[in-house]
Length: 81
Length: 152
Image 1 (cartoon, helix red, strand yellow):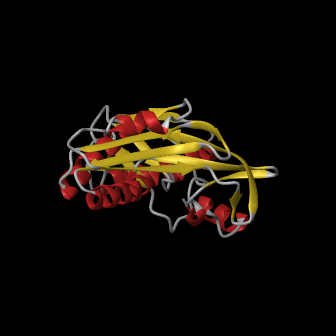
Image 2 (image 1 turned 180 degrees about the vertical axis):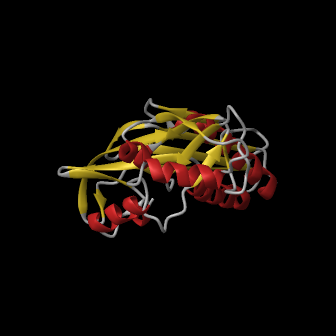
Image 3 (image 1 turned 60 degrees about the horizontal axis):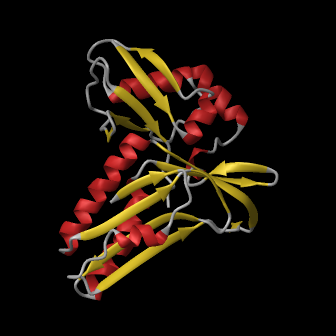
């Protein structure tokens, strides 16, 4: 399946792009996506850091199964205010 | 009641949204951009939002806080884009019939905004910049990062 993946803030700077299209097997979970993104962008985050992911504008568990067309965003630690 | 904008924030405008004749107390919090960060002089800040989700989270917080404190009026405005030092980046206004609920609701709303809303700030110094709160994302060393990359 095809997924639209967006990066913000620190992740965008480190990835060098704000979005890209990712191909994953059907039935892939958020955890699968996170490890694929780490493989493609090894300098995104150190291995001990868990990458927070939002799916369709909601924080998602790493066990969540992704669907074709989901909008996926990688969320570095937030610092609004 | 919820606003994310690249324009300068007007606290009076946000406060006006919660004013009602049934309220006897209005508490407005202003978050302002600070000159020093851990002793380093900051030139300006740059805010960025995942706007679609940030608006949703702000409204969620507003609803939760109004329910928790039993009040009808909370408004939140957040600035994005470049913000000079000493400017307002966040306005939270809470109003209630009596002061106690307005104080507590305002305080907790600000805390929740900082905890869960996907908005980020970058501090720009004369000699570089950094994304705030991302300290845990520092690599131990360039060498370690390279080894990690190779193993993937």
